[in-house]
Image 1 (tube, helix red, strand yellow):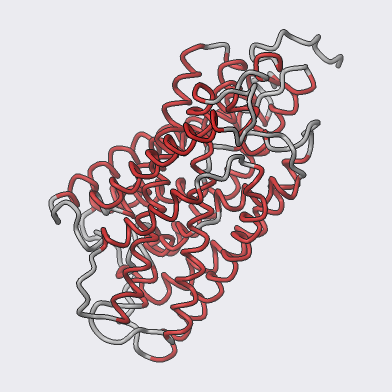
Image 2: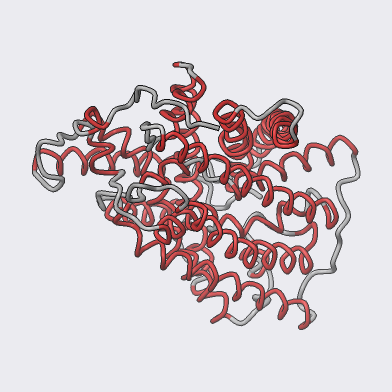
Length: 453
């Protein structure tokens, strides 16, 4: 079948030459392994500490099934999206932003703004969650060292926010490649440490009695299950694959698939080990941060202090990379209008606006993290309203629109089935996770010093 004739590029390179978001933040210089580092950091992060918590709303069987199905569907979705991006590039329309890709392929102007809205929700939600988790991890160490200390959770969140403000001044996505390699190594490190800590807790007899029962009410079990599915969607999702592929030096064809293979090898090792070991030991008493389960408020820690301390340090270091990766879309949106491509990236004209805007963005994320300490609930809400549409619905829709497989073909039927199933899951997940968020909001005051599970 002959290749379709090249279509006019609605986002031409000549326009991007005056687009600082593209010219600076989304520089296209990377190799496939750099994309693998970025993608792994975007997916395999400290959010995996919530996997045992997600399992407690699903149980063993459904938990394993959902974890595996999510892995298969997201890999398939990212593969399809990469193929759509490659197809557009071959046709002379290389897209470096998700919103441009969706608007071009679906031929709808409103889709451009829909994707901007969803990506903004994801980036802000992940930024808030990353800062909150970092603050919580520091608080865990502080409470062990100084049980009667006067510092509160919001103090540690403020510390993390200051560090993120400094690191946020790295100007381009590509400049994060070495940091994200370190992030990949750190994710393997703390996963192994936590698995060892859980095994130690189980064999030492210090762990609480194991109970894997679900909630007694049928309606409560349904809501908990959909909230857990939303958490899994948030953990597997990234919502920025086109922007990650944009960092690849052209031609980008085929490179992202290699990056995906690297990423999912790490996913297989880390996700299953943390989920199984954590839920095996703590069952339905799992907290939204498995570190809190291993270091309970009452009684001694359930694993050697040095193991837990090293795991916390690894988590904290990786959270810096997580925050940087997910802030890139927000930065390129801001700098598309605020920066001037005719002057250098480090010129005074561009440096001052970048410093101000990125600082304000991080302060905003830090403020909401301190004000609303709902780490588990934030994950489920972000997963339902953000990651499910971008990572479980749009890739299949874009592929069907681009390649036009016959309606009787297996590919078309699989894609439509995924769209229908995950649209329904997204709607139910939004309702159930928002319901839990409202219920948890009554449990504490603003700027609480404890994360609600």
